[in-house]
Every structure is written in structure tokens, then in C-alpha cells.
Image (cartoon, rainbow, N blue to C red; front, side):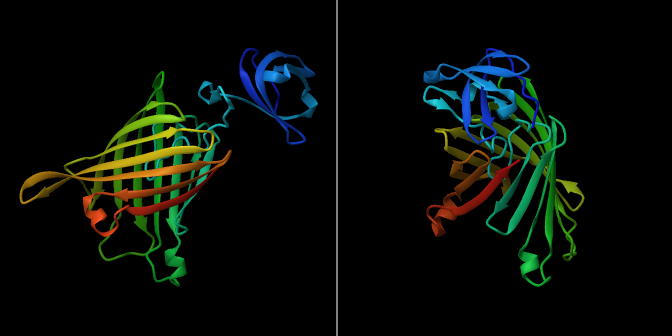
Length: 277
């Protein structure tokens, strides 16, 4: 059982040993009990010996219709992430289209490491390349609702494939907003064959939580390309809905542009499932 201690005046969500949940503003706290002001229930006295956990509720999760549970997938869009850091000791497991498994863990309040692998190679009786990736990230709060971060994404294969020596991107990004509603602008340079790309890729991503269990998410890439010695920008955009549980989320999204729409008008489907811990 965790230590039950709160700050009077703040709002908390309290889970009792029997599984029931009480939310409200903390009025008083002593060695044996706490007193919570809980809406129409008035002042409620709770013995600390009966409390399983006590979690502070962020201001962004305090709504007129009640208290929302914390966003279980607040730092991740579809492929990329925001600069909002994970709390130390927290993380998530993610499965994308069954075939790609990944996980992320925050070693400090500012440093996290993600990694993953595909299982198609295993299903192909060992004939595949066994692709994997690792993605360390550093991110910091620099002002109210403003965050900055950087990460490195490195991907390679366990089995050698011709002259393939791995791919990487070096990214920097800023995020404005909170864990429910945010917008991120990022710039990244690709690396392959021992050299960085001369032109960066730009990304604009965002999420907005419209209800307790529904959010919308979008991630959009602007890729510079040289065609006939002329620099052109190639865009890929995405749009999706995120279904939220207290510790889980499911994304159903589509990646699209004018070229993709010629073959699949609604775009290439994207499906992932995430469990926070």
C-alpha cells in the first residue's frame, strides 16, 4: 500500500481497498483519516487503512461534468511523440497492426527510452531480417504549457541485408499544450550510409481530447525532395480517433495524400493498441 498523504485544497481521486473510487477536494489530512469534499456527497471521512491509492487530479482533468481519468497515452501520437515527458517509472507497451511490438520506459522525469521489433520474421520461419528499433528521448518543461525535447531513432536488422547498415533520424521538437490537448512541431535529419541528409523533414502533430474516452490525433510529415534539380515538398498527413481507457488506448487512423488517395481514397489504415504502466 502506498503512503497516503495529500495537500489540502487540491483535488484527488481515491481508490479504496474494495475497488470503489471517491473524488473530491482534500479538506484535511491527519495520521488516521482524510476528509474529502465530494460534490453532492458533501464532506466524506475516509480511514487511511481502507485506502489503496490516492492520486492528485490535474486541473485539465477537472471538468464540470466530473473528473476525467488521466490521459493514458499523453506523450505519443502515431509514430512520433510530443516533448511532454513521461513521469519517472512510468511507460507503455504498444502493439501496431499485430506485427510490431514496442515499449517505452521513463528512467527519470526527463529521460525515456523506447524500443521495438517486428514479428513477421519469426512467422516467416526465420527467413526475415528481424528488424528492430531503439528510440531514446530527452524532454523538459521550459515554461507553462511549453516543452522542448530531442530524440534519436535508430533502426536496423539482426540479419544482414545486402549493404544495409541501418537508418537513423535525429529530431528536435517543441510542444505547446497539456496532456489532453497539445500541438508539436518537429524537425529531423535522416542518417544512412554514414551520412546525414542535407535537408530536414518537418512534422506537425497534435491531439485533442473531446470527452472522457475520446480523443482525436493527427501526425503530418513534410518531406523535401529534389526532382529534376528542383526542390519540392512532399506531404503525408494523417487523421484518427483515439479510444481511451484508464490504462489503455486504441488508435484507428489513416495516412493519406493525393497519391495514396488514388488507390485508397480514405488512406492507408493504421491500428494500434497501447497499455500504460
